[in-house]
Image 1: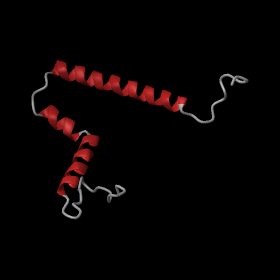
Image 2 (image 1 turned 90 degrees about the vertical axis):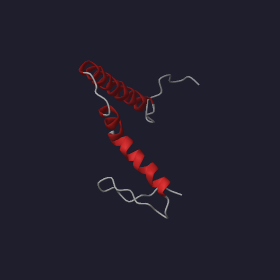
Image 3 (image 1 turned 30 degrees about the vertical axis):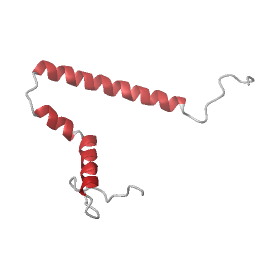
Image 4 (image 1 turned 90 degrees about the horizontal axis):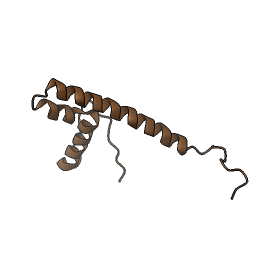
Length: 89
């Protein structure tokens, strides 16, 4: 069954055929992708400024690394590359 869902309006999830568990999973997935659950977990307890700086720097470094690796993977997976070893089998 394809996962077709009406576009979300203000994080609204439709409960289809009384299946609340599936709707809850969809809502959790949406909140996770938007970072709301992480923000909620962070604000449950006080975060020292030094820990906050470390976390923010770590997130920046991780984003740079992921962007670089994505670019490298896309470069490797190109289909129209010239043969690096012409004449070899």
